[in-house]
Structures are given as structure tokens and as C-alpha cells.
Image 1 (cartoon, each protein chain N blue to C red):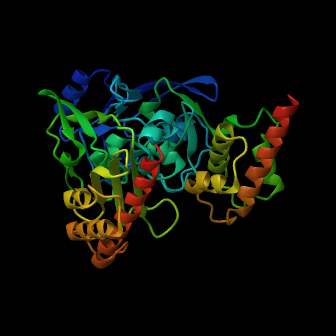
Image 2 (spheres, chains in turn red, green):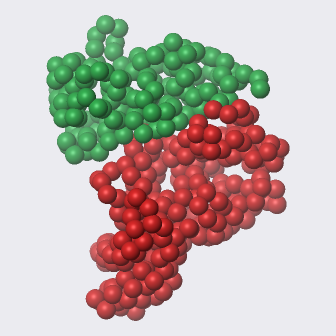
Image 3 (cartoon, rainbow over the protein chains, first blue to last red):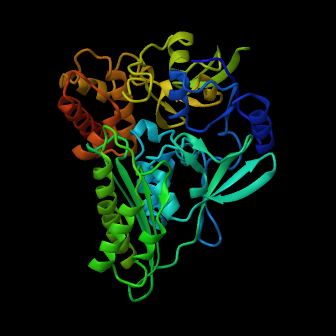
Length: 289
Length: 162
């Protein structure tokens, strides 16, 4: 591994100072991407700043309004074990738990998955569909931004020098609402998404969709929030015509790469298929609440 | 770059060592503490041969910096047997011939122990998914799965008898 300083600050202020003090300093949460990059020589930071001793960076809190706050360095395993969170946000939890092996789940975090900025990050479409926001801290203080504002392109984020994500916020859930995430990989486990689709629906008492959010991963340089795809579902009960419109809107939003995991045509086709299936799962989940 | 002094609990005993920031927990366990049971297969978190527990969580020690271990509770394969008495998982791995070259075995045992601690009666499917991050190029996995399920049955019986 390259030479760098290791710091484990116990406050946000110390962490911000440490990030600004060293050239190209990197934030360490679970390390399942960063340490691989360090070993491969793809990152050579002056300092690695470990967030896990900062209060708030680890843990899951249910807020008074029914929303959830999740520390950015909380492990996927801890997220999967939280019964209340899993009940309220099954799509976010199933997406997070798809990342890597049991061992990787012991460390991998939402903050890391988002800031690694892979277009194929599994938790990101689910978080975006959930309308999750990030609490960002940095030299200018604290700000909140929607998850879709963070990725700038493969491996790049919009975070400014000295900034990092401290926690994620999930909004309160209306009664008949649910989310779902699906991804396609060519095997059953331990692979990177060819396409990922997150769908989050809110229904009224009669089962009519009143809000719908659709987010697609691995089909563009950044994870997409596809407004037209969500709009296609609003006002109906997932009739075939609405699903066809959703499918078409999802395909129209795609701008994928051609690589060994999937061609442009294949990824585009699958984006529509997964969006339909995830919407159906979310709808069925919301209906029985 | 100065060395970092790390104090941790390893297999129930206090341990301390000096480390460089760029040293992994796996290398510190092996080279500083002489615990060479944990293996480096891939070094990138794909094979699970370096599996250890950190504060009760199963992780790849090749993807943990040694400096992160400060104050943490580490459990390795060396802590599995009681003196010369093998853990039921180790016994069943022998009986079922669930290993050949043995390089993946410490990681598989640590991961299987974590599974049975969390779920004393896992299905075959749950066991296969849980162990999907432990690669074995010898056994074809079937003997491993049978050994783990058999050990689970033994542990359940021991628990009932106790």
C-alpha cells in the first residue's frame, strides 16, 4: 500500500481539519472500496480519515416524525438487522444487503457506496427512489442535499474539499407506501449490477398511486431519477398501459455503456423490465399495509 | 511516517502492537501477533480466507486497516478450539472431509461460526448464501455445507443437553 497518515477523529471539526490538512485526503468508512483502491495504487491520499469514531456516523435512529436517520458509516449488516427500518423501507434495506458477501456487509456502508460513485452502486437507486437526503458536513458547516445530487460521474462526487456525508435521512412513511429494489446480475450472488431499479410508491386508501419515484442504476454515468417513469404510474393502479409507459420512460432515460456485463441494447431493455417488476413488488407491498 | 500503537482484545486476551498506517489487520495479526491461521487469498475482499470477527461482525481482515483495530474485540480462527478440544465445526470438517488444501478452511470456519451464532438452525440455502464470500477451489462446497449443517445439529443438541 502507498504511504499515508491514518487519523481517526472523534468530532466533525477535527475530521474536516484533517481532510483539509493533507493532499487528496480520503474518507474511510467501511473501506471495502477504498482499501482495495489503496492496494491497487488507484488512490494515493496524503491521509486516510476514519469517520467511525465521530458521533452520529454509525447507528440507526427513528425520528419523532417517523423518518429514519442512518449514520453514513453504518454497516450493511446492521442496516439489515434493524426491524423497524426493514419494515418501513424494505427496498432500501434489500438494496443495501445486496452489496457483496457477508464479510463485505460487515463493513460496507451507505456513505461509501454513494461516494465511491460507481454507476452500479446497489443502494443508490433505492435511496434516490426513497427521496433520501444526505447531511453533509464541511468547512462551511452543515448542509442537506438529495442523494441524487452527490454523484458527478464514475468515481466522482460533487462534495467539496473537506466535506463528507455524516448521515442519511429517510422521510416519514404514509400508511400505504412501500419501496422495492431489483438488480440483474448474470449469477445468483456476489456480482455488480448490469441494471438496478428502485421504485418507491405511495397509494391512497383505494389503491391509487399518488406518488411514484423510479431510479435506475448502471445505465448512465450516474444513478438516474427518472421523473417520467414515476409520473407514468401516478393516478392509476399499475394497469398494463401504465406499466408500458413506465417501461418506455425507463428505456428512454438510459445512456449505458457497452461492456462485458451487458450491451447497450440489453441494459436498456432490462431497465424497463426491472422497473416494471420493482414497481409491481412495491405496489403489492404497499397495498397490504 | 511514525508507527501507530494499537491496543485491542484478540481472542479474549489483551494484545498490543505497532503498525504502519498502510498495514492491514490481516498482516498485523500474522506478522506482529504471530496468528498465522488467517490467510491471504486475494487481498481484495473476494475470497474470505482472511475472515475474522471485529466487535462481533464477520469481516475480511485484508480490508481492515490494523490501526482501525484500536479498542476493538478481534476473534480469529486461533480462538475457535478450546485448548486441544476441537470446536464441533472443526470436528465436522474433518469427518466430512470438507477440506483438501486447507487454505480456505480458517475463513470458512470463522464465517460458519458467525452463522451458527446468529442462526442455530440455518437451512442449506441460508448456509450457502452466508458462505458465498468464502471461496474454495478444492471441495466443490458440498462437503463444506454438509459439515456446517451437521455441526449446527451437534451444537443444538449440546445446547438442549446443557
